[in-house]
Image (cartoon, rainbow, N blue to C red):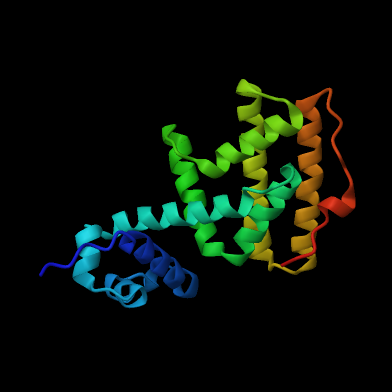
Length: 198
């Protein structure tokens, strides 16, 4: 009797590969190690992923969906950035996958970019900007958030430099929101924006 294919296998394999990535970086991701971590066989993985690039694409998708979960309930753009930073500090290698996928899709004008779409929705809700103006603002905010997160990772999550980077990021965000919104008043309540670390 033939066994039915596991509909969850691809996701299980991608999650297993992400765990290996967290622990040992890209060199830790071999098909044999992924099969062991996912509790499946190497031939089963080959049946779903014809090569390592296909597995990497699945990992990027899975990491992106985790990032969507992290930012989905952001109350405002400052909270959105805080959630991006927290996700990146917890999962620096996954963040690199997301940044790589985002850059490639942006350069090729491809969809989907769900975290970016959520950011654009948040910006419209908060500032009222739409169209080209919103695209420009979203690009500036995304660059600010990702650059700050990478800087904080390099500086060390709970160091004075990381905290300075975060405060500077939020200050720059307020200037951007003010410049693009024009008529809207931007909340600059420091207690709501403060960084407490992970």
